[in-house]
Length: 301
Image (tube, rainbow, N blue to C red; front, side, top):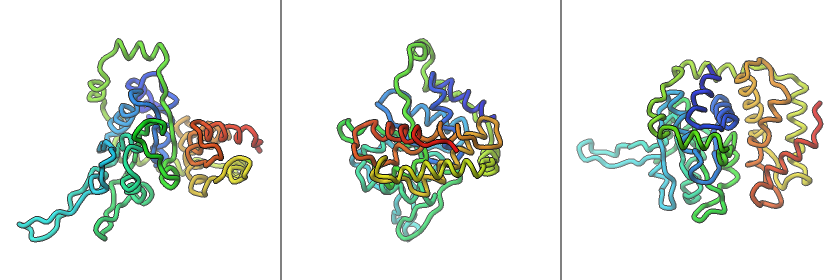
């Protein structure tokens, strides 16, 4: 069933099956997904296809410089007939929140998502309100070199389990896009492949995937290496290690295995950690190259 899910989304996001698999792995591991690329390569389409294929409630917010936290979380409004304030929930109260071009909003609005992403709840006017279960943030981000963007703080980047980049399609995929039907029409035709209970069942199976002690040794060696000045200014946190372990379990499940292999960790390493690493040279791509070099330099037990 999980492979059917990947197949269906790949009919909409053509020629990007590896990125589609990473996206499914991320949601299967109950993580949030950051899609970083230039405009127009299918970031929003991928988010729509994921939500519709899983039959989850979906909300899209276009992040702009004037977006306020209340526009995202909701606001209490005084209603005379009720003689009191009534809370009107914002778009964050959906199972899938698409934060489109998240780095075009100011730091105050970006930080409004921190509690939601970590605790699956929001606190407004002193009252805590639970978010739907499941709750995923799929955020798209334009390259920081573009005008009008604000870099996401490390605390928020650390809450994204994976960062993927779609890139330009190859010639074959682009020809299929040019000759095919409008993707917006195809999105409307997508039918959910499983019920909410079935999806939760798949997520529960992730925890049952076996992890050998030798693989934990490998994971700890990789995490410890990131904390060395040789590789980064700031290494990975225990939260990042736990996230990577769960992602590895989800990848094994997607491939039909009941155990995690070193290849799972290696395949997920760069998309799972590069956005979390703080390297000395912050130029674009440096963190990814550093993460790959660290992986290559760490022996497999």
